[in-house]
Length: 391
Image: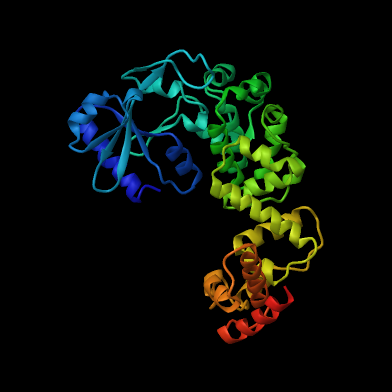
């Protein structure tokens, strides 16, 4: 688990900090995921060195969050985020501390973290610092708040949604006292910016047990304070590695109100377009896809629509292999492959641009995709002359 560039970079940084007389450890999700045997990509370091001291030790650094004690250290293996041990000041908005205080104590730093599984530190010799039983909770597949759950959620209400997200990612249960605190403070999630909520759902949708996460969302009472409908039973069997597919299925379950619900989560235009395409493909599947559907929608969009039909218990004859075969056998795959364009139609008709041109181009595309007219200038011109006469 410690052989990739990120781990090597972290240990290089830790050694230099230790050589300079400071304590340094790997913290956070990297330690948790290493213990779980999951892939680790971001390996962060915490240290007793103050930010100014970190910058003195390393020749190449970037201030990426200096007010919170974080410095990006550039070493040959990979960049490493190095954060000074700290305690947080008062939280007045359920989102962020008014101030942070840098400390020299690892114990004080770990005390402020959200869950026991995220409050484990790893020293350079591979030993662990675990004041809150995080390793035991990982072995028991339990999500438990560090210290008093009410205090942790009062500090940052997003932690409640993080607990739900972790339950989907890891298929863990939420410890009863932690769950009770979530029920009591669920309304505080309304303080959290929609962008932060959206980021948690992005990760939840690609979890290995989304259904478990949706159950916890309901059980905690958080669902009642979030925009949209969250019916856990509808998510049984759902699985994806693409967060956009999760948003598309969530949108499908919202019914006619989906676009308004989706807008509240601040999705990008690209994400929204993907959702719209999948929902349109899903509707088209109800009557059966034609060649124009296979042309208009991407393989990913069609696969998602097919999966949704199965989740909704619709009887469909299409398979993923059939989708790929149908798209492979299309006469053309993009509009750019047409050998004729609007200028050709204007020349052949002797007419200027107008609404007729858009209609003619679309009809031309459809007959070529359907295989009714070959994609050659001669065949399309012959077809167009007949089409123009009829118009």
